[in-house]
Length: 278
Image (tube, rainbow, N blue to C red; front, side, top):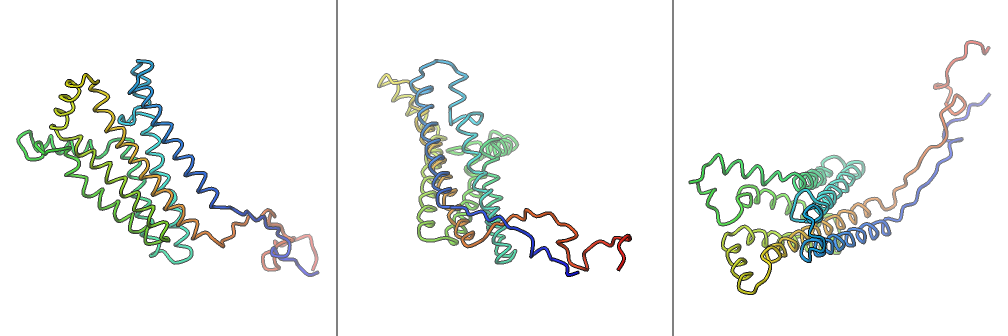
């Protein structure tokens, strides 16, 4: 009797994904979430409607153990995840060597997410400063020590990732990447100013002269800085998803819902039944 092969009997379920709608939804969710986090910080920290320190810390983006920091960290890991999928897709179609740059982007943003949640760069830099001693030049920098010790490496990683993403996409992708770099640059500029002792003295003098709460005056720049960082990460997430969407265009994701049986195997694959005579 003629045997039937799996290609004759297998039914394939095709899944069509509209990546444009998915990207729009993810970006809209991220922007709305960032707006909500901003409003929560204004209500519970600047306006201080409850006076409860636990709630203040929970919604304070300047604190590492807060909802905004969790969101920022998760968003950075999401960029790394998209980059990892892009690396895998690229390796399948263009080879492993072409996928290496995207693997770098994935590793960098996953690290940024972990760093954001656990203060790796601050802790590492503080340990170096303590080991160097109070009289060392590291202990007398005009701003935070991590910006001199770790900052250049983070900047190099970010610029490299930006070049990889921008070089893989359209003009739209490049503009989004440039916007992300601008947001990051502005946020780090604020961070540099925040770390200067003179800025603390100036803010305290201004608050005293104008009878303005000192906490609010020092918190507002930190709030703006964190919001700029989240916007920057959203830009990189958007650009990465657009590149991945382009590379997935025309590809088919199929699921085989037919179990393999003796009937769907060829002669050479069919198991031998000793009870059947030839």
